[in-house]
Structure formats: structure tokens, C-alpha cells
Amino acid sequence: MTRKLYPNVDFYSGLIYQAMGFPVEMFPVPLRHPAYRRWIAQWEEMLLDPEQKIARPRQIYTGPLQRDYVAREKRA
Image 1 (cartoon, rainbow, N blue to C red):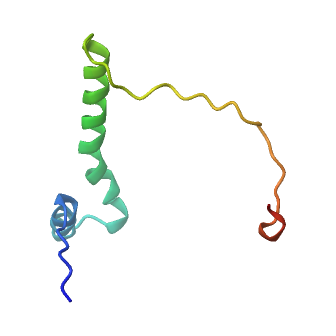
Image 2 (image 1 turned 120 degrees about the horizontal axis):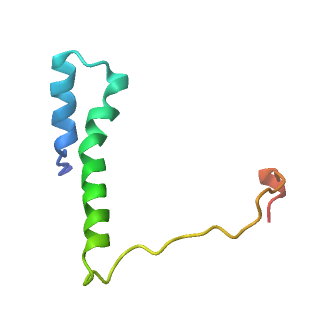
């Protein structure tokens, strides 16, 4: 059985970073940087476009600030 797995650009970027001598622990930094720029651009576009109707609503947690730990076997 064959699996049709198609790696994304991060897979190939990782190979290039490894060839350039980047430590593996540092891979998340350059791999996430473009994503941050996209997220910020999308947020700015949402703020500046008065016709933009779809956006994530603000979420405010209203639950208890602190809860006691309950062991897994005692949970309902």
C-alpha cells in the first residue's frame, strides 16, 4: 500500500537549514517567521478593510480562575 504524502515547504527548508549548519533546536525560529508575517498582514487587513465581515470574535474566558486537581480515575 502506498501513502501519498506530500511534504510542505518546511520539510525542504529544514534540509537547507541543516546543510547550512543551523542547529536543529533553532529550526522553529526561521520556519515560523514567515507565518508571523502572514498573521500580522491578515490582522492588519481585517482592521483596515471596513467591508471585512468575517473575523474571529474576541474570546474572554469567564470560567473559574483556579480549580483543584482531580485524579483521572476520580473524574466524572
